[in-house]
Length: 146
Image (cartoon, rainbow, N blue to C red; front, side, top):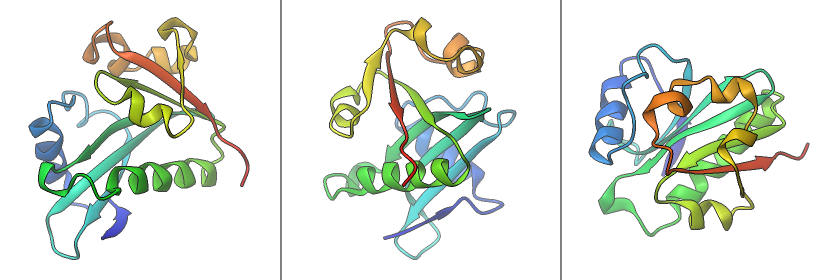
């Protein structure tokens, strides 16, 4: 499996993968989200994860792995790649909202926080304001300087 940045022209494919998994896509044409995609060397994305930055904090957006590719650790590899990318960009904290993956992220040392404890800049994002329901779990991870 190859992990790489999203290439121009692949946006629709990733949006379709996200929509298929019932993840928010409504703001992606307007929001500056850097995606990392997983491919098997072909043209089709098998998985993706996004990073939206707010100063030195990142909002982890839309981790998705196609249903037929789950169970092989690809989700963890995508998170690791996103964290490395965030560190390279000088980010010191990641924040996310999830309705279904809290145990997955907790196993990767993300801590549950109150939604209103997230940095104000992140709270101003469309994902926080309207795309993710109030019932979503808010989690954060402080990045070390590896």
